[in-house]
Length: 330
Length: 152
Image (cartoon, rainbow over all chains, first blue to last red):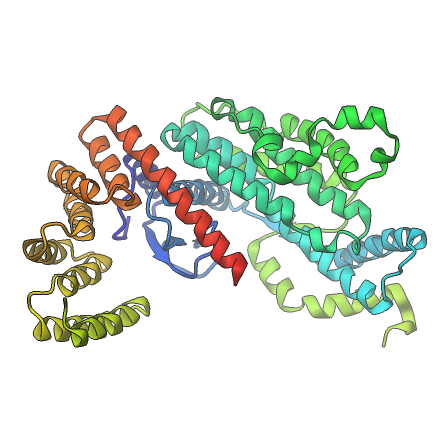
């Protein structure tokens, strides 16, 4: 390990374990500009010789240790898959972008038909690709979250209280996401997005029971889900709200997580162990995509494919728009 | 009261250090010391720069110098604890952090170093208590940082 940062013993041991298993050296550094969730720069994604874990400079204690632990486990999972030549991410092609944008457009039309105040056409067109990419990003990140958090919880019990705080904070931020666009984007996608976070938080609340992560109590935004059944009985109008629908879809997604994340967490932590975690993440991603009828939206490809696709995403967007709208789009 | 010019050089040094221009920062702190050698802060500021670069022995000497001028300098005791921990002198680190916390009980870094030192010394129950206090303070700081961000 390279770095001048004091780290708690169990986390330091975990980093050393990762270095030994992957045959690498991990640089741990703090940076004022680092995102709150920290950054992992790894050789499986970027052309670097060492792995880098960077955390925000204002985290001086256990929050920093938790970020390091979380990113170290992420690195182990990526590395184990890469060593088998099987590390892939959710990427996109010209065809898959068209599939996704077209579906969003059809759903937007249905929603717009019911609205009194219509969304200006240029805004609607602009929204299609933004929303598509939002899900591309979420599907590359969200399925990792319950797996990595469960792993850290089991491997490093000493930082559980910190993990609890971090998860509540993360849950709060995720529930805040998209709120400003609630009336713009098609209901279906607002609901899917909220349902995924709802499911993740509830899955973790049950998986990490010792510290009572109670999302509906501890995350202010989740209070909307509290006593939902009672409200449902009192008024049928409530069942038409996005929050009720998010709960219904979220409950199904919890079942998907339960059936996808099956693992012997206390097995010998060798490369096969971490590869198995990667397979779980892939399975969970596929199952969530199926549930949301997004199978044709994305493709599993090596990182390079995604990096190349990102370079031409504007082109893909324009081509998809031309296919959807024909000559109406110049 | 410290010399105004010395305080100004320290301010400049901090600005350099924030931009990771460590040589310039050290030069600025040296200027402050040359203006007022009885002022503890520039020694501590130099220690921060050395610690940031992993030069803990040098940083430790500077913390000791700052403490010799001002024995109640809480931040210098805290940084001394960090240096000692990094040099794997865990019992000494614990003593330094205990002193730092007697002077300022709201230093999350001192609580954290106390916790990790206790853990290294096999006193895990006491370590958990220190970690708990450190986390509590870190959460307060985190929430303040969040508020600042929202207010921007």
